[in-house]
Image 1 (cartoon, rainbow, N blue to C red):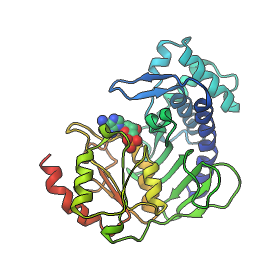
Image 2: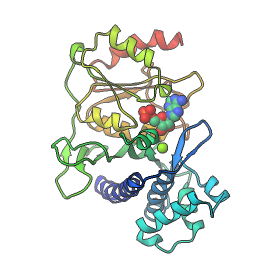
Image 3: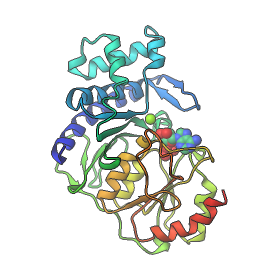
Image 4: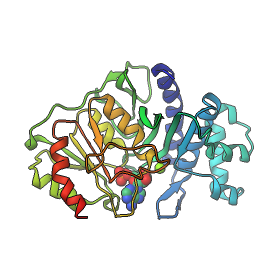
Length: 328
Ligand code: AMP
Ligand code: MG
């Protein structure tokens, strides 16, 4: 795997998945089911995953895949309105699947590849489904792990404007050793290199958190901002768009404390974002300063939340958080 192969794959598949999501968004009614744990899932989540995983099973059949959605509920009601709409969206979006059987679309959604591969793709077909449903930010996240380390990432952010201005829709790409870049989601413009901000003065530090208060610990976020005198403001954004905002140099800190003692973060909520942030010069650890450990399958089992920053104040933030996180 090299940078250009990864970038070309993610650009094509990311644009295709984004157009499926935008199409669903433009429709009057967005079908949402409630998953166990009460997270919503829409026809766009399933269709976007089918688009991405179908491309992975064709182009990288030897690799492993970890992804957020499964086709179980669609297989259980294959003629219901949700399954039928998902199949229709996928047939329209992927020329190779234009006359695919339902089962083939469901198999694409469930594609897991070869678990023994050193390459593992971590896919969130819609990260921030709640943001997507609200008409706010969301991301299509494609992370690539090699020997359990995020080495490459793509974050498609349909509601974010390019740094250089222009219509909404940005694609962020990174590959270890090649750097991090952004490009408009549509059009042929050059990729622009991304760098984290150089801000190291607390009074100017801007902090990012979740829109959904149940996804984190807003009290700890507030304590950190007050305790270290961060004066740049708190911005709440859905999804891994937060990593993209850090990589673009538009904020300095993204704190994601454990939302409850038994919560474990999903790899697909972090792999792509961490790869892009690190390639842009930033740092990511857990809230106790431990390296993120992507070797435990679908969850970051060994980590306590996530802290991502532009770098300079990272250790100081860990020192502030450690006793508070340990006290629960
Ligand atoms: P965000 O948009 O940053 O709030 O993150 C969205 C992600 O939060 C989703 O992709 C879910 O995987 C994840 N999530 C869902 N429930 C929780 C929870 N109780 N605590 C932390 N994260 C959660
Ligand atoms: Mg998702």
